Image (cartoon, rainbow, N blue to C red; front, side, top):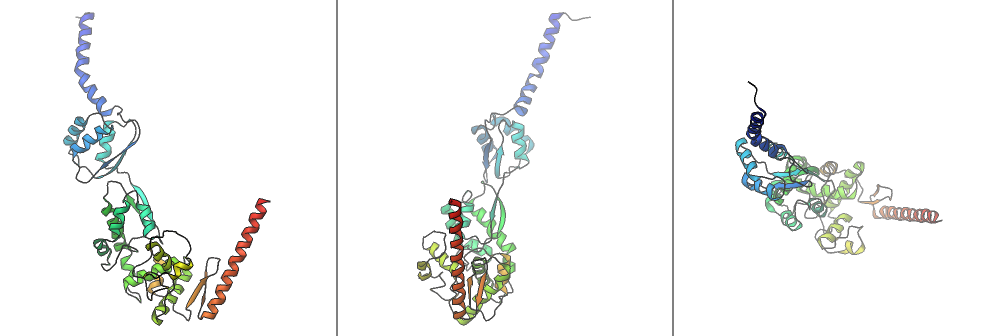
Length: 345
């Protein structure tokens, strides 16, 4: 028997009301969220599901913390501490899925060969506040973790590498990651040299800052090793710069006469022997050079002005090389002025 129009409308209305809660639940789960623009949420160590749900609602990422809590408990969600980025209008399902899959947003931070303390601090400033950095830089526990408990600072005790960091990490965790990489990747390579491992690291840092040319590094290490054996001061320009920076003058320029004359335990113009710590992160090639210095008759070297160095066994030969270097610089300066004048014309 056919239903009357009134009965049909009543049936459809009842059916609609029956499925309405399901439609509402589907929309709450799959529909567009309230977030107006991309946002980042940090899930810190020890954060509970309730705290994350309330944080997401408070920061406008989701509409209902209660619905998120129900889902999280039903799925037995295991929160992974990290930094999570959510796109505008992300649905509750999108937000929940990203947390369940632990899709952490990482920032790649590269610590290069040759970097020193101030350079490392600047590269890490988004993850390690400056005050915390300098406290951790002198941490005996971190130095011990790196493999050198006698080290005054972490200078040289960080691996040159690219690290995946996120802002939910604590500052000490970031620094620990860097020194553990050193312990695993660099520390074993310091064994077997003519000097102790830590002195090898110090010498390698001087070589690293003096020349980037692999074919010269063993010769530079040889000059310094011979000077150490003879009791001569190393007179390494980069150590005079490091002493300048430790004295509070953070100009990153070539050494000046006051730098050379400065009485400082890191300035190898004013004190004998190696400096107390490395002055930078040495490369693998510099470490190999420091382990096996190429000791010859040479006791001096000076830049050529063209990227390399001239080596000399005597002060007289060295002074002639210095004269050639100054002549080369003068020629380059005249050529630069001539090019500038032509450009102005």
